[in-house]
Image (tube, rainbow, N blue to C red):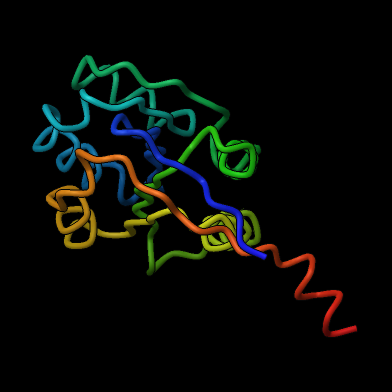
Length: 150
């Protein structure tokens, strides 16, 4: 069974970055400030605060990633309160909360939300005509698939 979830024209976007990638994300946000200003923004603690300080864009912030912010964002995805994520993670540095990061990315796949993990992907997605339209995403009911395999 597949559940259809509708994204409105005004998207609910999570912005997250590991410490060594915060400057990269901030530079990208500044470049895309006008587009991002049309949407609702969310972020983990430090990243969200820095975005607001440097761009004046309003960002609803959660806790810092290592102390539960990644999990808070994941729960918001599950509840349908976030439908897009830009997550600049650091591919060269092990994170103390790597299991939380993996769980967040798993939730994003389960709930069929777009995820950009680098500038190229974010640029492609944000220039898509779908950014200015309603969009229906299809969430697979994995519960039934799991039961089928038991």
